[in-house]
Image 1 (tube, rainbow, N blue to C red):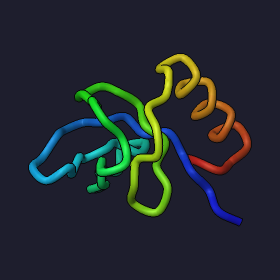
Image 2 (tube, rainbow, N blue to C red):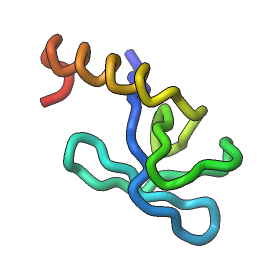
Image 3 (cartoon, rainbow, N blue to C red):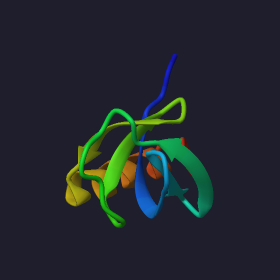
Amino acid sequence: MCLAIPARVAELRANDIAIVDLGGVKKDISLALVEDVQVGDYVIVHVGYALTRLDPEEAEKTLALMAEAGVLS
């Protein structure tokens, strides 16, 4: 089973790289597949790539549900 999760963009770097915050864990990801991402945006991340931007309210709901289900800490 594959899992794509919402993450908040914490920092933008050169060459379509961003640092995202995954519940306090910082991770480098590629933004090559998504345009116009800004710091503070939520993106869906799968295997190190942002797949799409996500509405902040939906991202928060999804993260809360995942934490409740024990998928995220």
